[in-house]
Image (cartoon, rainbow, N blue to C red):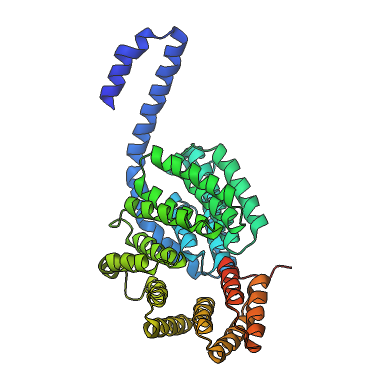
Length: 418
């Protein structure tokens, strides 16, 4: 940095007009002051990072109605950027199994960010006022993501609009902009606005390519492949997912690598290419089991895909055994929704072989399981349509596939829209 400053003074400043030279000298002086301030604050920032996890643990042990008050009354310890970022991390982790809890955690993070506004040292520790605007924008985007998963699309759209307003007044951090664009792509994907979702994904990918963030590009490509899959462009989705597997840093994020390989095998199955799916499963088998914990639900997703591969290869007994085992495993985990999705795959399997009594039994079990859950009305209607078709002993593969597609579409929606 010192060498660069000397070069500017020796080679750039002499060639500038007096007014421009004065402006640049002032900018360089401010930059030097900022560097000195960061060096002074570095130990405090590191301490805040160490304290963040236990502080958030203690905060979340309080009754919910007291948590915001605790943040507002705490003078120092809870008022830090690392605490807000830890709350956002937990929001991201909660979003798919409890979206409204994810919204609440992001709101708590925003309360923390609000306590930093206008407070000299706290603001400096958080990247200055523009850095706080970035943080508040990120909090709003995470709230939007929670509402998106809950299928409250209008509120999600409103939160994204507010997030973008904050980011426009923030630091212009490109990685943060890419993160928000990616979350917005998920929203319009869920709304079935595929052209717009791909446009947002493309813009996100351009930023990652420009910044040479290859791993983040790989993560984005997994999402992009999912958009094309739901759009009905499976061949394109497979090509994108193959590229994603090349970009993902498996050592950095083995879970993402496991998801990508399992998705690729799944897409090959949907294309009617079980042999290719089997190759993917075999090639990634050792890496998958070396990196994924024995209790991870990724193992169930993998076995679910393995059942489809076995079916496609004609190993019918193996396929049936795997479908039943995975269905029961999801039920043991009290994940009735995924258990119902596997049941629909098993029902299609039985229907193909005219085992209509088995299909009727599955339909009755699935309907009873899901009718007591809060779920999207269209998903519930699709299940009932399947139930009545099975009750009449109709060989209705298309009815089953439509029910499965509808449940997949609303798999994270735990609301009954009016």
